Image 1 (cartoon, rainbow, N blue to C red):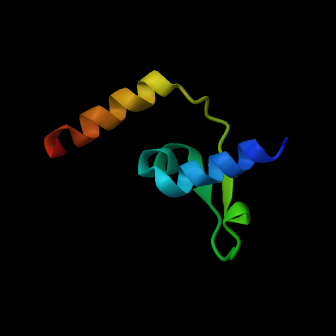
Image 2: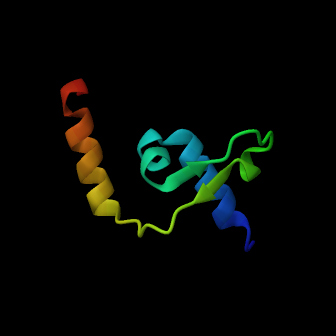
Length: 61
């Protein structure tokens, strides 16, 4: 159960482009998705992330 957070983090990096750009560090050459990402030490602020995403995509709604 302790490793679940890492699986969830990889899923988020692969699925949500904004999270990938802000918080994910892609490692090239790794074939296994779990090994192809390293996280950053940035503190995740959900409200700030949602606000930035809304501003970035407001013309697409």
